[in-house]
Image (cartoon, rainbow, N blue to C red; front, top):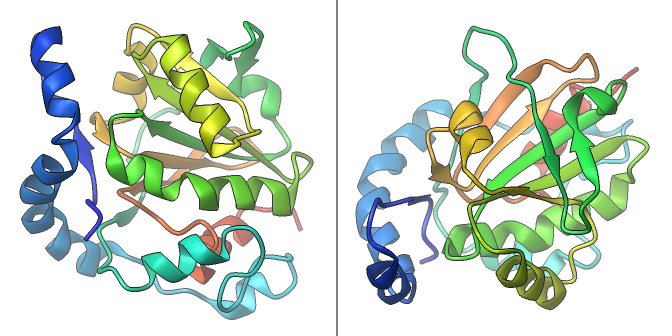
Length: 224
């Protein structure tokens, strides 16, 4: 079973290197009991009628992420979907791997999907193919997908991005301040932001972004 989430421990660098190899097992033990009840309580059912007119999937995944979606279908859900808590949407301005600035305020008029992740997090890695497929399917004109990496070196991130063939922007949160403002540092955490720039939904845990529930969540935010 793939792990549901990972929490970033506060440990010395030497021990981090050792524990990266064990992150899957540690996360599984910690999060299975934590998230299973919450997933049942908060997960929202797919609404095929919401996705039919948007080009989003209403059934099994097709295309480049079909294999990843088929594999995830055999695993129990390990995620929660909740509304953004009351309060303002934090600002977000970071640079990407090419050194180019990226800001949330510049994305007004489009739905934005922010994915907070790290390479040492197994469920983060597992959901990346479906994020990439989603970005390709909808295109940047309808949906802006951006990955926010938590405090890792550019060299390490670049190796992962090349191996996973990611084309959406990956932003560098070098000091972790943006991640702390947007999440509880449980990875992966994704936030859907409406065209008006307001955060709407928070998805914690590995999520199938090719599935009908993802399609329903995004279709509800797309301009009519």
